Length: 123
Image (cartoon, rainbow, N blue to C red; front, side, top):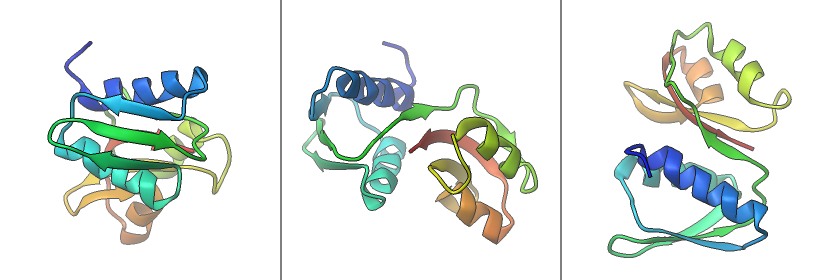
């Protein structure tokens, strides 16, 4: 395992999905990972429960999720370019952007005219 907790966790989720498992238990966690999982939970892709250090995730309607490496720093007018690059169709899926106002979805960042760092995407 590497030092990137978000990338490792999203890879574990995708490996479990490919193996047709419905539940994944993650041993590492961070506040950034919990915030990304909250976004995925709000859109109905997963559901999770957090214990002391473990996170139990049940996969619902998730097609694909992946961390964006390297983490591109994007200006407000270039977010559309990266959404076309990482997402399969327009208005299908979400890119998580870390801004100075906190984590938000790429469409919120475009509405607020804020750039930031691309963290992950899911659909």
